[in-house]
Length: 322
Ligand code: NDP
Ligand code: 1BO
Figure 1 (spheres, protein in one colour):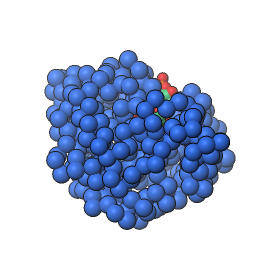
Figure 2 (figure 1 turned 90 degrees about the vertical axis):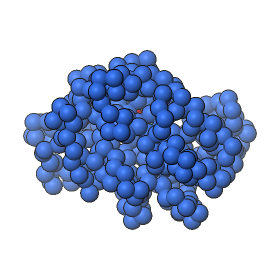
Figure 3 (figure 1 turned 120 degrees about the vertical axis):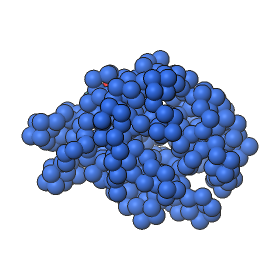
């Protein structure tokens, strides 16, 4: 269920309620590969675009720049309490003793006192300095329960308001739900019309876990160019919207929040103009029927070693559920 709020610029923003009772704005700005321009993009998104949700991660190497952008937006008059800032715990830090220091480092880089959401970035522990693809010994056993207890401690100590996961499978989610005292509020997964991942979306809905759709436009270099997909293009022309807006709206109408990345001021502002209109059911369905369903972010480079370790194939990464 979405609810609407209005920013000072009268931009209507919808948001979803999380299990914790907090709300997550339906659209956030992605910052993977935003590089040194991240600060400018974040400030433009918040101050000119009306965004109130920013998605980042330690692994993106842009937290300091994102922090400068957030600070500039606050300086321009936006209240910290009206912003929703997400970051993620990288794989090298997936050991209980490393969780809190990693979060404190992230807070310092972002110049923030708390995060709205802290996510486990991928459910695999990597050795320090792991190569891509990993060599033997780079992918290690992860103490999921121990790591989650530490994440729960961050909520108790008010360093983060909500915790969650990314890139989980049904198997891993069921394992987590078996011992979680604080439920994951959010599961962030790759989702777009070229990879709907209905199974994971349904499982999360059944457990009242909110889903954020990442790579909603099909991602960046080496991704899937959904912006020029013929179905997306036809629907965009018919509705007098842009392909980017059609893809973002599709995600929201599925009940997910969505975090398109852009460093282009016009596209940043375009991608959030998706409120006050709907995709007609027939067009929503046509997007759901786009063939050739496959992941863009399958994790092979990061985690698969064909000859050694626990993950010998992409199917192993996803617990043979795809
Ligand atoms: P997206 O699907 O958001 O696509 C971004 C690409 O689309 C960029 O090349 C961007 O270029 C371009 N673009 C943006 N808006 C438009 C538009 N309106 N028209 C045409 N092109 C456009 O890719 P991402 O993979 O970056 O995913 C979004 C975010 O999700 C990430 O930035 C990150 O925050 C998060 N994420 C999380 C992951 C996880 O493991 N949890 C994994 C991957 C992503 P330009 O900048 O030039 O506009
Ligand atoms: C390597 C990180 C993928 C984007 O979240």
